[in-house]
Image 1: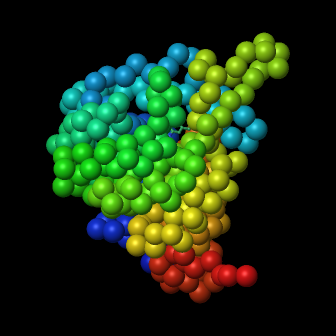
Image 2: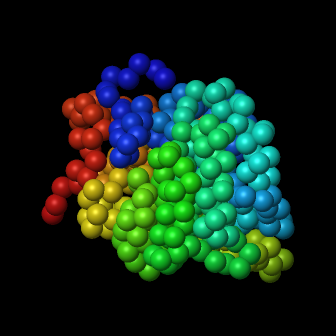
Length: 307
Ligand SMILES: Cc1cc2nc3c(=O)[nH]c(=O)nc-3n(C[C@H](O)[C@H](O)[C@H](O)COP(=O)(O)O)c2cc1C
């Protein structure tokens, strides 16, 4: 990392990050296989693609499409299962100049717990609990239900001593209720948010842009939606650390999330167009801080001014 003129460290409960930016799950592969393309030295952490207990094949193509300024995806968490993941990725975790967080997904609480144990064994620094993937076959989404979310987080909590973050969905009717349930069950922080349900159609072929028709929408247009979630949770649950996530492309986007109440900010879709986007964003963030006489990240966290 270039020598910072400002202090970029931030905390998420028990975890101290050297930088407030995090690479979002599913947008940087398994981190180790993206290392040549990205610039991980400027991130506080990077989250590997979600992994399940057994291998998942993923959805049929087409499963990625543009839509306006954003992206539709329905990858379906294609992954080799935790055993194979740990065998392939575990020995390489030390190669990358950034703490790697694993991401657990599953069909039930036991599955999530098994993955969390496997991720810890493989050497990740923290476990993100992906309660919010909108691409499961039955359309089921834990993050819409506080009881189901709490059950999964509690199972993961008892399966690992690592810090855990719960990744929630902007599709939840009451995001505060779900965040409170995750916190109560043992989550150290929440990630707000995963993708928004979306769909699109090709006007020439008249076919859906995704084989599954409905998928997850991400990128610039979802920023205001995720920001609203961050704001609501920060207001209602001030003791719960938040990683903001959705539509981040610039240093100002990071500042906006911090002002809304996030302590760290994840970058996802921007990696597809600009794999080294993190370096540019950190320079912009440092410039903003210097210009405004801000020495530390925590001076910005939740620092939005009232009207
Ligand atoms: C192609 C693609 C794959 C993704 N895969 C995962 C995943 O495996 N696990 C997960 O928790 N989130 C996944 N996400 C969601 C992102 O991590 C992020 O939460 C979301 O895209 C919003 O941030 P963004 O607008 O910066 O992309 C995926 C997103 C995209 C675009």
